[in-house]
Length: 250
Image (tube, rainbow, N blue to C red; front, side, top):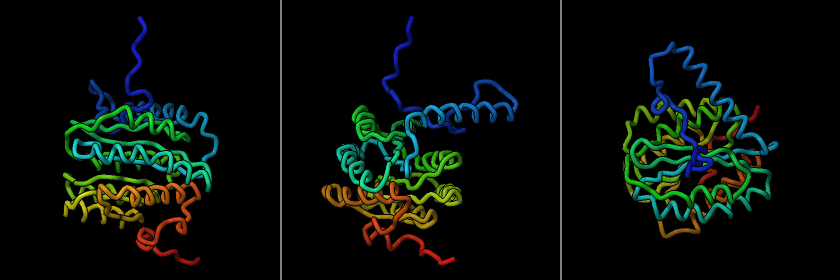
């Protein structure tokens, strides 16, 4: 019998210790070797057809129940992001999201807006707690094997430990990956932590109103261009650009 193709298509679970624990007791080195080989196979598959993109952007979203309107909005803005990025280079993007109970997934890398739109249209948001820590861990894992020029994260709240999140952000900073965080709503704890993640990683934070489609669209287009052009900060709006670390002359 043929196995039914997963409805999730190109989306695959993020490989982290929290999810992919071995079913039986094994030597730690054997487990680490197996996971490393698995990642290498998946990354080699993902690279097929990409050629040499000028930039890579991880587009991460909180897909818990309260986020459905913003998920739909972000989906509708994907074409604009790709059109803008193509003016400055070849941008490869990856969709990462969390929702429900312990569900956190990442897509393969793609150069096509239609891929991103197709993946996003396939899913509905589900109630659950935030899992930003797992996204930060995933960013580290991706940056180990290939440069990631920028990460965009869109969310409204945070339900995770501050010290844990800050520590993971520090690891992302060591990989030189700036994270740009956009918050909808007025959750004070999320605002504080989103700003801190941006500061630690060398990215930026901005607040947007759910009705302000044009503002979020402008932000996303500018970051897509920034990443495609090899982190050309001149392509960012002043509100974001002024938050980036100052360039030092050598």
